[in-house]
Length: 508
Image (cartoon, rainbow, N blue to C red; front, side, top):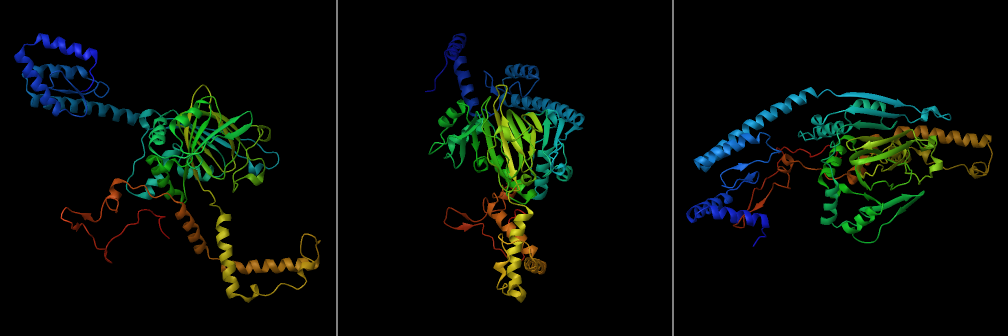
């Protein structure tokens, strides 16, 4: 038996006294019949004759109340539902017209670009210029990304949505691998559908999340960066206890457990042509989880909830521009003055090229939840040449005997760090240069590109299939076992069968 509140019991007794036995039986029978047909949405009236929508869904509640009173007098259930649906449709049409009008007025986006240039006295060519885009976008212009059925167009549309109001061409030509970009929006829910703190809590409760493998607990206080990972499963009570004690939570592979992040990253892979990773960071109010450092990836910080103060610094020297590996944790005295010091709020975007030293902390008693998308790790010309040169040298050695000739007998007597410059060393060096020139004839860039693609395919996330795609794959189509033990829906693949690859970069 379900529990009943005292107020509900009192109301029931009061109504029962006012009704005679005959009316009470008739009404109870009517209510029981209507409860079986009760719709999921809306609120049922006392007479069970009408489903009234909540006020926040339909504003003109007076019209519905008047219709409800008329229906009670008639006592015809079917007619009442028809009248209610007609009123609802009229009201919803009026609301849709108003929304369309407001959207048309707010489609024009105005932006102001503020550039701050910090001159480097040692080498001006290695400056990092911080570009800030102040974007005035109303809530009504915020349209979530949806698939249009073409993976290439989907990836471009998604990246365009992330960068808005910057177009892709401008971003790639002016900012990519060159300078940080800060896009300030007045739309706090711009990225709301990606993830949330309640969803993070649910993920911890419904999955076997492990410390160190899937999640890190970190802190940075008084110049000391610490990791507080206990062994075993990351139970919510343990994680939130650390959070209450000013520790940050870093989810290392949220795309494994959160479908929206999986969809986001898998779609962007088609645009970048390489693995797109993600980290999820939850920072308690007035705290910092990481020391100043730089990363070996192009990073896009999507602020989901709250806000965080970010300070960015240029590389310490030209050799740390576009690094191939991440840095150590820097001391505050090593990094100098920031080129950008700003508060990134919910809905904002911050882009950091490789080598940008950065640190973030929460302020004003506000927590922070953001997703960092990481791309282009080990996807440079150096990585391509590491594939090209060994293959070219192997090809040259097989087809050109000059590469197989022996070294001079006495070359160790004049070549090496212990020997100064000499004519013998110059001759030896020129011979090496000539062989390298000959090596260019054996370079196979197609094979090297295929080897790079092979590595990317190994690292790729599996494609996130939309509904129309799932219907054409083994996920939702194919053979079906029937009740009589016979397999149906079998399809034979013939040379005439048309097959579409799910994604451009799924095979080489």
